[in-house]
Image 1 (spheres, chains in turn red, blue):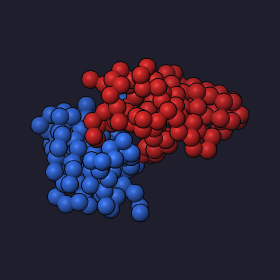
Image 2: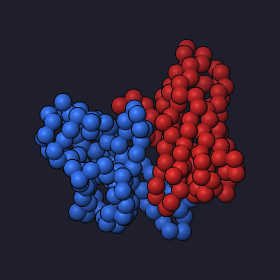
Image 3: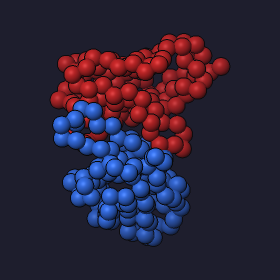
Length: 111
Length: 118
């Protein structure tokens, strides 16, 4: 059974810092890995999707990498802003449909 | 498109009562998912429909839980009778699943229903 772990569980940084969120998974037979953002009381918003054949994806200040062989992914956020405060979830797609989620990293960016 | 629409946003009920959660997926999507999110277990898949047919319900915790998708634009998740341990946030998600492009499959989530069973 796929296990997805996210470290750290919570993170607080001052505005402007660059930061890295980590995700690890136990079964490397994945179709893709996705990073989601969840704001309090809201649903999940897909940020980046990395297909299993890719190494990284970028969107604005976000960069996600994937090392399938070692079962690791990182989400890099450059020049953090208070608006980046949210919970970030990592999920891997093993079968054609089943997303396995980590428990998330709760990020607080202070002004 | 308005995205995935769930109702109600909040539900408070007493133990033993029937609860029905509703979901309208994004038009054109052929896959629908119900997830449950708790602090202890995180996000877990309850059931997956493809073309309105339940494909995988192995995540449904007990017979008290049932889900239906009578047409491509509507799904329900019912809990009868409800128990306090069912308190959680329930999410519906939809996607267009193509057998050829599985690696590009993105699921779009609704805002969720926060259920409290007293």
